Image 1 (cartoon, rainbow, N blue to C red):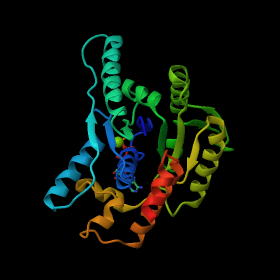
Image 2: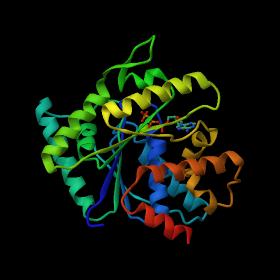
Image 3: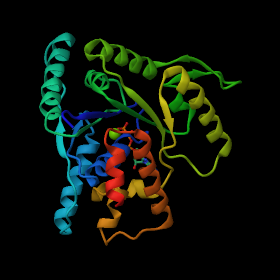
Image 4: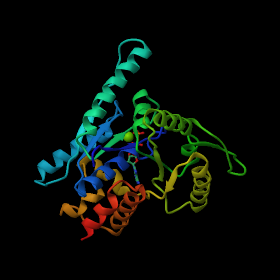
Length: 276
Ligand SMILES: Nc1ncnc2c1ncn2[C@@H]1O[C@H](COP(=O)(O)OP(=O)(O)OP(=O)(O)O)[C@@H](O)[C@H]1O
Ligand SMILES: [Mg+2]
């Protein structure tokens, strides 16, 4: 690849699984031999950068060779008028983006669970935008207003409109397109009715807003336990300290499926090479 493919993981709703999904995508790409850089745009929590810090510590303590991405963070400007601060944020973002773009195959940006100027810049630079949503109409509300009786989509809401603006800005800047993928996360094996309704609404929405809706990850305790060790389910085969259960095997299949569903450049060939 001559310049990095930019993957942005975003959703203005907090806690939908952006950082967890981003980390699993990062390690999946590293496993296939790609050079990966991350930019953590959640300037307060920095969950993705901290996840990777934990990974380094765990690898050192257990004498493990774990794949590592290049980690980058950005701070928001705090001095000046709103316009001046946005200018400073934009200059910092573009300088980092341009530096990484020539040296890595993939750049993964993890956005905060709220609107920020940096997050908007990230959305405009995305080649692939991934939005995890949970099986709840509270999550869907940021994508679209849904009729409470019929569950029909009535109009787009905040986040979909922001992505729409980002798509327009991107087309004007370099005629680029953003492949928007909405993935479900934490789908429960129970509550079949709600699950089906969310599925129906996302199916209606995907045509209207032009995103690709993919299955994503189920609700599994293991995702909550991996953070302190900095591990992902992709690593389990490399760490003999981790016992594989059936749920872990199923989770690994979901991750593999998501990676296939993303249709990233070169991924098909990388998958074939890894299987051989
Ligand atoms: N598939 C899953 N199954 C179970 N727990 C999950 C799953 N995905 C994420 N979680 C848990 O949900 C919580 C929120 O996940 P995460 O921090 O990745 O979300 P986020 O969208 O990045 O949040 P924020 O908006 O605060 O940045 C965490 O405790 C995480 O461990
Ligand atoms: Mg996060």
